[in-house]
Image (cartoon, rainbow, N blue to C red):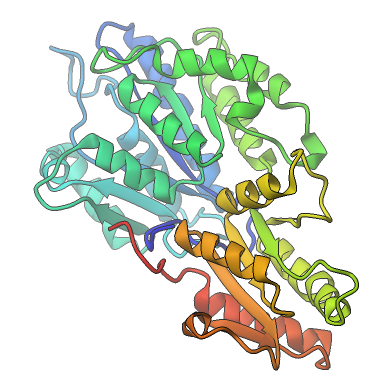
Length: 400
């Protein structure tokens, strides 16, 4: 994970919606303006719902195209500025929810796109960047490649909502789904501003109805209801009230399965250190991971969907939000899995019982040493302090 990736919430700071949500899409100039206005109403309400619930939003800035000959107040063919208007209104009213994000709003742009901000949006942009709630990320100077912008957005976003659009929306969905991040496509038939792509959000919505789990999974309390939720998000081409659709979409985001921490640790019950490691994970690690809004995956403890344990381990590591690697006992597999996690650029926290001798190379990696003789409350406090200090460190080799 690059140093610009969305932060893992600190333990004890979990809000109601601990995700940044990217909202992406566009509309064709050939579509009825009333249908485009419906899309804007959905986006405005959704952005308001997200930030007021403590979540964040990921967008871009730039020009705001409109249909040829349309008046200045006509609905734009893109939706970023509408979402930013809603977020700015929440900031002005003090209606941002308690958030684990220092900077809940992320704007990804290029030198070119910033120069194309319309005059009537300049004051809004300046208010946002001065609000103390916005992170502005720019791709390399001189570049305007939209693909680079989407890749950077996908690093910060934890979930994606798409409506309309063409190639750009489809690319963003691919980026999120490749990392198994939730994608919610809206079935509103508004085309794409560039008249490109293979169906955009409408096509993706049809695919999602057929294979919901490819697009997202709910937490255990709502498991199996993903298809019903997608059915409830059908706009019937603008017949269902826009605010109802936005509220249902926000509700779906609240139900999403949480990101997970993958545990790498001593699992041999016959090992003399097993009891101490087991106590550390059950009494110290589990509660802290839960307070950070994550579930756990521990091969050998959690139910597995894989026929082979090696597949479960490396797939679990690859898609985890955090790998928590304990090297107590000198288990060689732990070192191999630690190397895999570091190599993928994932977030990795390393722990070990006091007295554990680390291999030379691993000594260069920050490690939290825990003492099984300390009270549980002190062990938890020490791990939280280590977590806060190291959870969002950049990878050994960055992307940018």
